[in-house]
Image (cartoon, rainbow, N blue to C red; front, side, top):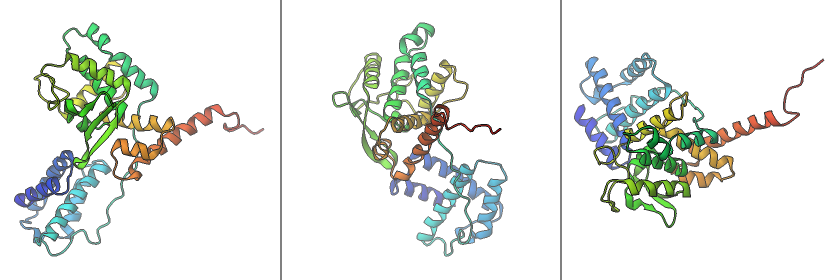
Length: 306
């Protein structure tokens, strides 16, 4: 079974352009599934039936995981079994007549414009350098945050940037997104300025083919490293809640729509394949608009009767 799983993982990575995060998650999920069915005495794909699949779903559900985690695990198993069916390793689809739970729809978390300002003020390189004498990455961290908020990049897109991907004259960055799809995104003047300051302090050499952001051993900063930097910046700004890179991406999209940017342009900048994925931000903006209306309009508030 493990050999078939490895073939499937190679297939979704090389043929279907799944992201490395999805491949890693699917690898974990499928090995868990394989361990579960082996515990039932199932040692070949032909023996996997509806009962085994239902049993696995019940097994995962019993651990009180989130709905999205459950759905991801089901998706991993379903994709794997479909792959086995198409390659003649199985004859019947065990998922036939199995009802799949619906996706839990949550509005994305985002920062207010005031909170973005707090993050910038608390993490300005001169501020950090004055307080933390032994921290040498203030310019890098500030450049990462301003770039993410300016351009709505995923953390993997940030860590994957090379110096040559920046166009300081045109104000663009060339980004490799999900599914190895390349796109150009605009970069604002504030982020470009922060990037110039960082490049002046970045270890040499500085040439187009080298990673843009480096870690403490002068190798490419990882996705996890980007996430840790954002958490550290939130602590400096004394945020009560934790902050992750995706919240900055959500903030980018929400604030653009708040200020009148059209949905199609936001979709292109975010690198979303489907417009429906981007439309969730319209709900966020409408919720905020309703709050402002309720507070500001004299006839919006419910009046007492009597």
